[in-house]
Length: 413
Ligand code: EZ4
Ligand code: CO
Image (cartoon, rainbow, N blue to C red; front, side, top):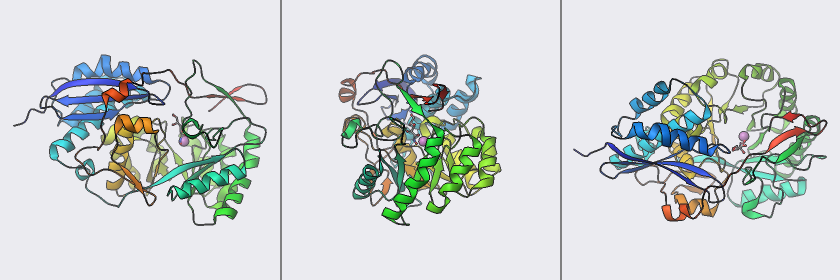
């Protein structure tokens, strides 16, 4: 009998261009598992939760008991849900699945039911301050092999807008590459909803005219609209056949999506800031959305996200997992193992990590023919190089905040 007791739990922080929080577990026999616990802009809160509160509880537990450990940490906290708690539980759960798959000698997707598809259709982020820059960015994504593309553009009258590269040729320092900035306080951006609503339909009309009807196109409204504004945008974009319109309204009040749904057949995606299946209950049962945005990292791990996807499948709702750079290669690998296995896979966001990040985590997933596929070695197929990681110490960074251009009021970013 091998000794599968958890013998060590280390909380690792590295910043190869951006911050990542990683949990590394070892069994007594030396089998290693990794979990991603990165919460963008609030990283050290999860470090403390894991290091001060969960790590001591894990030592001596059987690494095989994944479900029991999940329930122990979730019910045992008493304080349920919340991004910090659920990211910490996600890291433990993911690391335990990594260990179990290594002990089984199989890539993780085999334990999740086996392969259902060759790979996960991935979408990339094209952006431009104006149409010529946007078209260049779309072309460059097509050349890189993307078969689905998110479109974000500058808005006339606004200096900078979510998701748009400030300098399209700036490589790894591009704004759409990394929205968090290493500043002591959040950068303040300006917003004007009327200008945005006037501008966006024309952008999609131009993109369709240039690139044709076939290419799947997506757009992220990033929680900025009221229900009736969101309904208007969804309706205005119908002629351009979007794959989805994301986060049209702030995520707390999911019931407002009834109003949006009444007015438009543009598919809706939401959930990158959700933490649990409970956030989705009303959305699923009333069929108010088409895609689930939760990543493994922020929704309590593989155990919890798989349960969310199964529930979604009852309503023909599909996965559309969040894949920005702040979900680490560990979190992305976990999503890909789930993505190739589940019956209701939809699409996977793929923002690509920096070369420095991939040197730390050495992911074995591949991107070819528009599809992302998990590696075939036992476990998640991700590693952690301490020497490279330690050369990139934590550095405080924040996501921007938004103020209305009109009068400086705080708005949703
Ligand atoms: O703003 O990951 O769809 N992608 C997004 C991201 C989020 C960041 C927040 O950490 O909305 O760019
Ligand atoms: Co988003």
